[in-house]
Length: 220
Length: 220
DNA sequence: CTGATTTAATTGTCAGACAATCATTGGAAC
DNA sequence: GTTCCAATGATTGTCTGACAATTAAATCAG
Image (cartoon, rainbow over all chains, first blue to last red; front, side, top):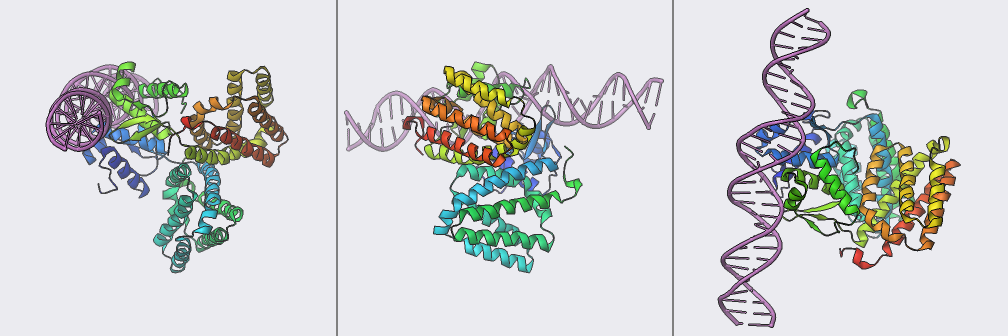
């Protein structure tokens, strides 16, 4: 277990599971057995249960009484709901962040450049990485920890789907163009414009996800 | 989180603590001792710990490693952050709910009437009750469970402060007038107008809370 | 092959244990 | 009397083992 460990066992278990889900080693819908993790990680059932509890509250796992927990899977409706919420929150974030970033852009210009560069050479890993940096930069400039936490949770929920989305060059280009437009609006201190672009940006991401095949969604 | 009670022990403990916090029997900042609850409620430590864990994720309690949990207390900045987030979420809720409620108003007219009646006779308990019904009606009409859950959590956080806010007749009147305006916009299927009123409504609530004395806030 | 019944897995909860950490108390030194 | 520090007590973090209740799997009768 080589994560940002606080020394806490529960924390380590939770992080390990989170990572496994993100990497797709634990598929959505898959049931998690307590005894399984006690053996594989050499920790007690109490610790495993507490980790499950925490991750359930985080929305990563789904808890069903007397049945245990499973990796939460989302229906199309769930994703639609999620992107509606995410849109207004990301919009709020960029609205709050704009005046601050306009005054102190920090890494913003470099990140946008890196995004464009990654797009040109088709480096998906770098693209994903810098995309995360772009949004993190905005959220942290918004200076609202609650907002940051909520958005982090929402992003975790779509993390594994996100990868299946950026496949065609067209979508990548459109997405990246929105990044550039948004950065321009931010640096010009046009909060309303930046928010409008962000709303379109999140809407596009949501639409791309809805275009994915049925097999990636639960029935619900 | 007010889930349907499963009769589960952990659930019972969590609900009991939530209720105690809402009623002010457990004051913000107060530390909760595990052994205390095992004795008083006749349950095991594991159950208490799991309940703590759940409530921490819900934002009701604050967890500090090796120190335990305490009833979370909020600084003015925390409350400002919270109301910023709440505003956009409640705004989204009413925007989504408006077309549905315009088509099928359900109890909306009666609730608004009951609010006005409670205001006239100065019945604070009824006022609070119908206020909750008003907002619940909107959120459930929005048909977005994720949004509903997030708003529920945010409301829990301010529940105990809310009571200290509605003291002067002026604020009560203004608040209630917003309810009436919002209902009118909803029934006229004017989603944008309804959302605008909601934003003002939440902003007013936030301002009233900021007017409360320092003693009700943590330092931060 | 289907359905019912027995068997095995798994969860929910409890009790008790012990080391690690935090909080408090009571000096000892200044 | 105040300040620092060690001894003491309280509390948390984690583990082990246990057992009833519930769910899932296997078995067998038809």
